[in-house]
Image (cartoon, rainbow, N blue to C red; front, top):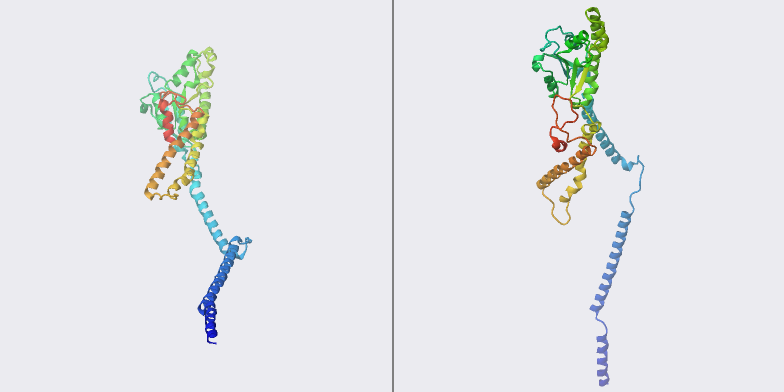
Length: 390
């Protein structure tokens, strides 16, 4: 019995050793619980992420213009629209009205367009012996125009002594912009007319009696719209009054042989005339855009080039992989880059005029003679033109 009991004890111990301890059983239950909790949390996070993804994937649905959800946006848009419109309207009234203002008092300001009237008739040797007829009439009629209601040019009677009794000095004064135009009664105007009827001089030219001097290239629009029409009207008025008076005087003079009058009918009608000389004509026509609309395009291009070069300059402020440039060096760079760009842009603009054969290499000419496009700088005129545009 004792042996059997001793044999039973090891077997009992063996079974006891083989069974798990209570601590190990509790630890297993805790691990299972943590895994389940982790699973629940993971599923909850996945569900939450799915909901957030669903919210991002589904954009807000469009609404109508009068939707309540757009009340604040509508008020903001209306305010910005009204402010922008007001700014543009003020700009139009304040800036663009300057162009209208320039032409608003043109008729009243035409008297500022000075026109010299210089009477050399019978006042310069060797033509001082006779009685001048044409010079006093021209002076009297131009003075009468000054007493008429506006608009009229600013006629100014100037003594020949101011120009050293030299008609060419009057031309020089017009070329030097001391007057917009000049009416010159030649020293031999009456003497040559009288000689033509007395001697039957068939070479007499009525257009040699008076000259009208101007420089059309100074301002083509002003000359052809305001100055020349009034000068032409004055010329017509003078010739229409002088012709009948002179014809009557000649026919009343019985000492003049009628054969002479038959040889020189131009000495009776029109008797006198005006030769117009533009010292610097405005030609060729292709130069018009170079001095008018073309300059506007050049200004617009210069203005918008700021936006064209902006993305290039911003590379220094938003670089990738390297530090941005400081403010002062950035400003200096932009200034030099812009000025240097204008150097080439102005060259391209100037080359257009050269391509369309605007003359830039004509020889110079005397300032008192009529010349078409004389160049005071010779072959360097194009460089001067380029630098002006620059």
